[in-house]
Image (cartoon, rainbow, N blue to C red):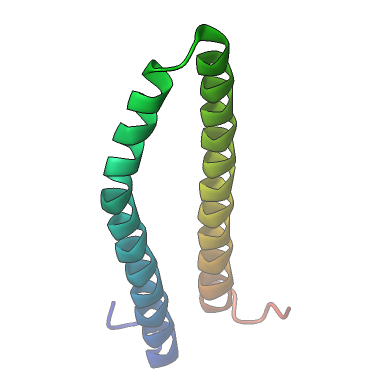
Amino acid sequence: MSNWPDWFLEALRQRFYQLELASEQQASFSSEDEPLFTQMDQFKMNQNEDVQCLLSEWEEAIGYQLSQDKQSIYMEGVKDGIRLILPVIQPTVTR
């Protein structure tokens, strides 16, 4: 990577640090949420079938929304990559 301009390498480092921080924060939330999921499962088991069904639908909707959020974050990363690399591979292209 020594052929890359210094500004490009610094931009990559900064983006990496941002993503690493976000990833660490997300990981800490998921480990803290484990007792909550256990309690939710126990709560669900103590409900009648209709309430269990509603809670399952709610969980599915929340899971879908989370997957949409993750997809959006991924696409932002792809766009960041394109924004960073395009000026390097095609320096005459202007925005």
